[in-house]
Image (cartoon, rainbow, N blue to C red; front, side):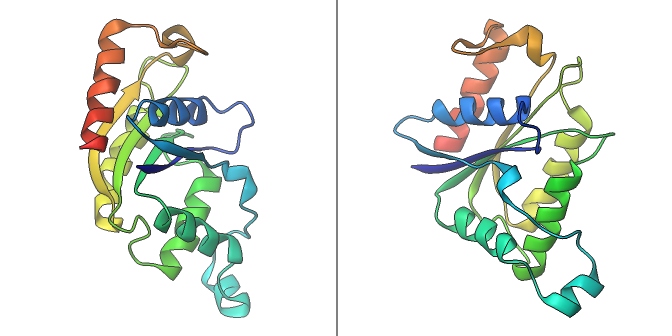
Length: 174
């Protein structure tokens, strides 16, 4: 299974990117492509920009990456209760090209944060909207208190949370 994994953040130290890549690595026989949102240089979406210059090449590249994979693992960063501006902008541009940008691909939706809610607000937004935009949402998982519950090279330290993520990964792989 070819898996596209990314954290919906442009931070070079993104904890959501780390969680997405870790979760994707748990898929049996998975071949993972790690996407870095920083590689997509896009103007801020507006209808005026689209009318004057068309859709940016980077938005089509994002859609092409989704199409080239069997499944998507995305971990949403929560910025003030919503998607990060960079992800929302890419998502908006991609949806102008393709009304269902997730292309009916199986998806594992994740979120994490340093706090105890683990990006609970943004993951609920994704769960509510991504299926309407073509995601075959198989499972979701939110990891609270990232720095307390995750260790590089180890993964999730808390056995109950680790089991929840494994079950979500199994749903993606089914």
